Length: 60
Image 1 (cartoon, rainbow, N blue to C red):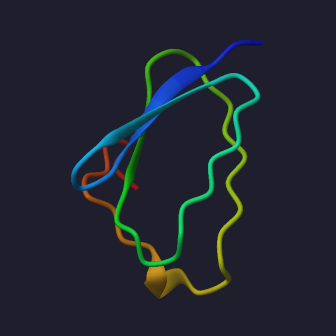
Image 2 (image 1 turned 90 degrees about the horizontal axis):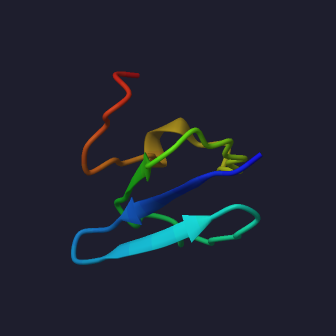
């Protein structure tokens, strides 16, 4: 299975592909964008109020 996309921060984009690991520091606004069918495993803090997205393309 493949997968590719990028994480958009306020002033840059960080691209990822299959098997990449990316750590995002707490309280850093970001948006995850898949450019093809992608499976993401996200591990977050247990505090739902600390999630801030720049833009949410997936209407959660």
